[in-house]
Length: 133
Image (tube, rainbow, N blue to C red; front, side, top):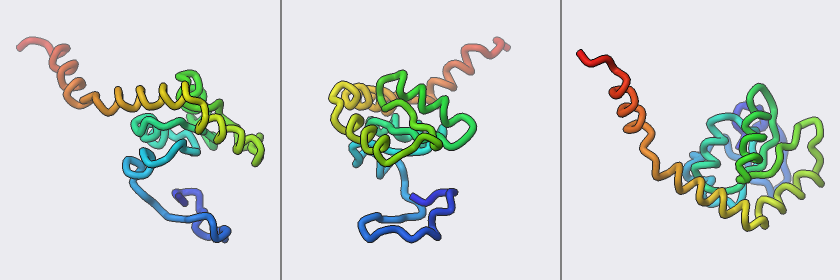
């Protein structure tokens, strides 16, 4: 995915498919693991999909979300961009796609998130805390 990173102008090898955008809720459940920047929306989509996460933080809150995912045991430790090497990325992909416990935790968390009705719960809490008029 090219996203906002300006990757659309980069020449890539024939075995790399480049696309400007695709719905995460369609793509991520079809993947064995997702390598991403660690933004809030993308992290939430990966968690919802129930697949392991590999985070390469780029800015602001990305390291926090990468560490949170790792702490939950549903992804590898984040790889800071300055430390990123092909070897580290390959190792993270291997871990995320072969660690059965990590895959199971990601799957269970995804099922839990997908079963939630966040809007209904928010409305319930809102009404519970309204003054009685």
